[in-house]
Amino acid sequence: MFNFLNSPIITALLSALIGSLVLYYLQTKLSERVINNFQASETWIPENELVLLTGGSGGIGKQIMEDLSRKKVRVVILDINQPTFELPENVTFYQTDTVISEISFRPKHCFSILRPHFHDISAQFLLNSQS
Figure 1: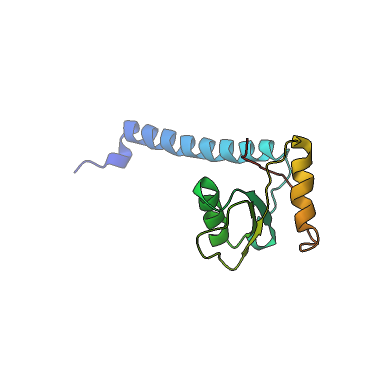
Figure 2 (figure 1 turned 120 degrees about the horizontal axis):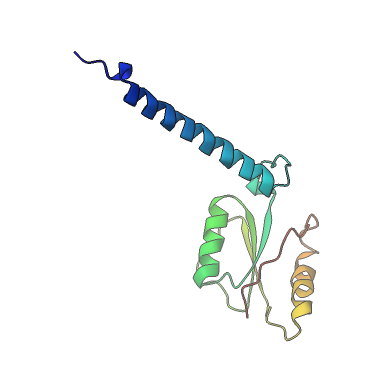
């Protein structure tokens, strides 16, 4: 019976495969470090996050709210339309018009609504999909 592992071709192919996997792993880890400026990334704790979501009563905003809510992220929806569905426990809704003519005022307006209720807000980023 022929032993495949004794074949030089099979040994070379297995060595190449294992070497490729090791290089792929190292490249992935190095890229991760470069993206984080060679800092170890901290573990993301969803329960410690607060997301301000404009337009979360329907469409894409509703889907984003549902996805974040399932991960136990606190979500605050600011929308002019009332939600037509029951909100999860970790989601709060404020009815307001976030479409303000002066674009530079929008973040200030949104955070002024939230400050009295959420004292631990620190803005990491603000994504507003309204035009």
